[in-house]
Amino acid sequence: MTPLRHLLLEESAELLRSALSSFRYDLKPHEIGHILGIENGVVRLCGLPGVKTMEVLRLPGETYAVALNLDPGAVGAVMLDPEERLGIDDKVFRCHRVLDIPVGAELLGRIIDPLGRPLDEEEPLDALERWPVERAAPPIMDRAPVEVPLQTGIKVIDALVPIGRGQRELILGDRQTGKTTLAVDTILNQHDQEVICIYCAIGQRAQSVARVIARLREGDAMKYCIVVSATGDCPAGLQFMAPYAATTVGEWFMSQGRDVLLVYDDLSRHADAYRELSLLLRRPPGREAYPGDVFYLHSRLLERATQLNQASGGGSLTALPIAETQAQNISAYIPTNLISITDGQLYLSPERFQRGEMPAVDVGKSVSRVGGKAQLPAYREVAGQLKLAYAQYEELETFARFGTRLDDRTREAIERGRRVRELLKQDEGDALTPAQQVAVLLALNLGLFDSLPVAEVRPAERRIREKLQSQPALIRRIEDGEPLTSSDLEALSHLAEVAIGELS
Ligand code: ATP
Ligand code: MG
Image 1 (cartoon, rainbow, N blue to C red):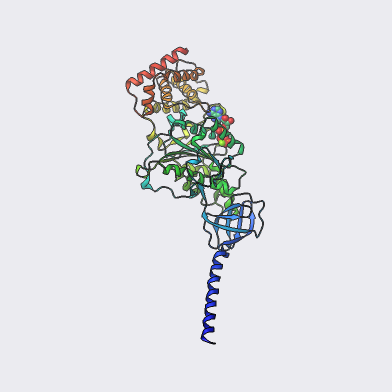
Image 2 (image 1 turned 30 degrees about the horizontal axis):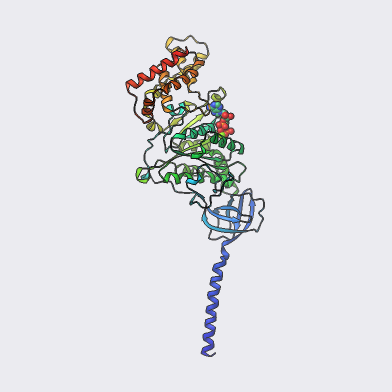
């Protein structure tokens, strides 16, 4: 071979090699997978060796899935869209990004799914910045104690089980006990509180989500609200992602120094969706057939709720997760997990609900572990004695039912208790301002309602609330967190006496 021919051969081989390498790079043949099997929202794939956990995969017909199981032989992914039109051997493409959601102030007033696709027939949200759905919780050093109250406007909560901004308070109860109503009333009460509210529906009936949205629209609350919805007819994968996506949306506002309230309705359905996916992904079942990491599922979610310190912007994320109990069993697996993760729970009793004592909060089984420190000081004057009086009444009530002869003190305690119970009733959407609550509860503590028949208690309450309007300076002081002075107490009790006097 002449040296010239040798050189030519060498050169063409080099050319061929470089062409081949770029050819291989462009096609990325190792990035296209194939479907091995589809089963109830879970797909098994082969041929994606580089795929990451939580990475988005694109399937035919603009449908998406997210990779969860990375086994050596096959990848297990959960569908985020209906799977009807997919078949065995269909191609699957990597998207080279983990699951994310649009974030930003433009989301206010919108109704979206957990992938950020609008459900409200308004413009798409493609232009917005996207944040990953799974994010690490803020480190301890960035956190601050819970100190600012989150006013729900519901007497029994604000007075007896107060919630603070950055707290996680579980709403627990059987079906149809007013759980959603409690959460939505709390959202509606934030209209003048500068709190961004996010309602995250997980596995709910489309009709009940529509009802919540209608209530928010009626109350003109959508301007500070976002709804993230994955209803019961959505694929389980989408339901599983919903609370994480909603939290990411909330975290963006928190990073801007805003206060955020997040309602997860409900996490029992979320655990069920995860159980379904895990069983289909062949993960080993544990107690009640839930996978072993179901506790981690909720703890990594709720750990993201916090109050940040000033150096980190001072924002907060308050979480109100809802959980459904079966036949009042609060010691079932998911409820006990959630009780131990959260900073307290509001237990709604179906018996109270049936007796018409709404909101059906069972004070004895409800607790708030951190909110007490955040409660407005004026409440301390009136709420401490209330809990005691109510607890005594609940004990005595059983005796009184048998027509036992009672001494005067017991009869007094029972009469007071009856009025406490009557006064803690509150209609849907009838929020009270802190000053109204303090005025009414003070009148109760002073025994001003004792002379009235029980049926007259709520009309009297209404009258006190009306009369209070004439004291704007006092209202402002209570809401600014100043303790009540003796002249304030005198003014409030005088006002209540006059109001009640007009009735009797
Ligand atoms: P589900 O288990 O179906 O999710 P739930 O526990 O969320 O139910 P809600 O849907 O909030 O319960 O309430 C059930 C019904 O009770 C609704 O019709 C609601 O209007 C009524 N209700 C709830 N709270 C009150 C209240 N304080 N006053 C009057 N009605 C109420
Ligand atoms: Mg509900």
